[in-house]
Length: 165
Image (cartoon, rainbow, N blue to C red; front, side):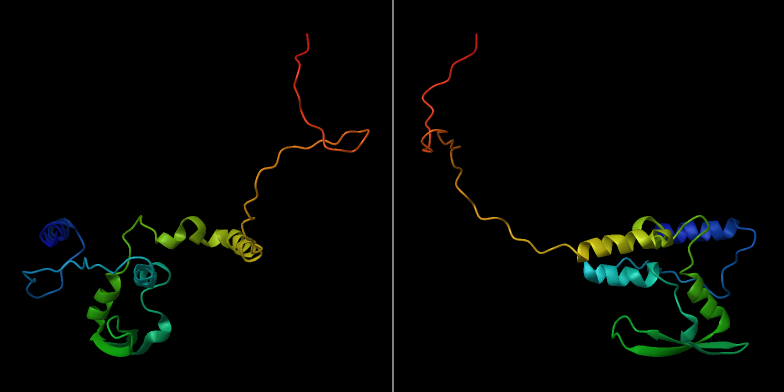
């Protein structure tokens, strides 16, 4: 998969009028990050970093000048904050790897995650919070229908049925 991806990318860049590769030799071995991030909550946590907000908030850019950018991030392996200083071009290259191509939208911009459905989401949350806790009713044995005699008030018994003519 990495070879196919590399070939397509290089072909696209070769035929594009304005895009150029960074100077220097191209790596011969490309790694396409296809690691398993788990199922359920771990996968959701991994994806949420890319789907919910931008790649790097402004508050995490500590210092910058004409040549270098210093920024803070959370290391995905150790879950600890770390800082990193990169040349401006390399920093921009790193950030632009997370920008979606023209015509694509983030997942959060659809369905119940879209900004215009906030009131609907709140309504659903309130409905779910106000649901009473209930238990299944106890199993009861079906009883035969009883009808009391209008004269003596004792239970009547069906002895037969006739069909109207």
